[in-house]
Length: 198
Ligand code: IMP
Ligand code: MG
Image (cartoon, rainbow, N blue to C red):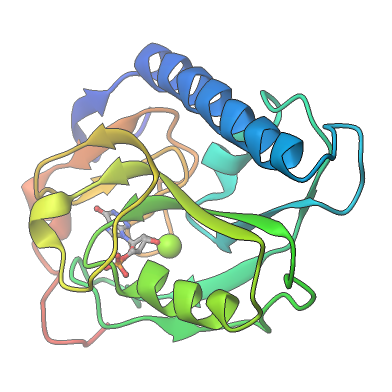
């Protein structure tokens, strides 16, 4: 779709199938939480999904349509890759935190777990509100790059330490609408640096 794409790492079909599998698992775990407290999938106010903007939007849009239960969405925006950078500069909260997560079953969703600083920060802020349960789901996991002490409960694909775009993930704000997980040509990333300029 974009001429800057070098190779496809994960095809649309594989993503779609894996997202459906993840949704089945998540739905079954949520159902179990509800049963434990004598509630049902028709009850309101128990399940909250917290997507981390902006990278999670495509993943979340596909995943929630596979969840046959009453969930509400409460967004949080975090940035860590300003401009033309391919290394995390640390997580910055760019929005207000959702409130009223106390006593709710909360599922935080993001596109990718990299250094883990984004999830770690969001986890701390939500945990303070004392949710009934708190879980994390990501489409992609670059486990070898982890710096913060965190892991996801639901992982779509483990991937190597390569900068990827598509299906919501961007480079410098673009390629989020590419429908597969892909790697850009090296010359496109050539101007990117690790120093925080950008
Ligand atoms: P972390 O805080 O280092 O775990 O970074 C997580 C955030 O960085 C994710 O929410 C993504 O938005 C972004 N990110 C990490 N790796 C990549 C990548 O390979 N491509 C695009 N964005 C990425
Ligand atoms: Mg992100």
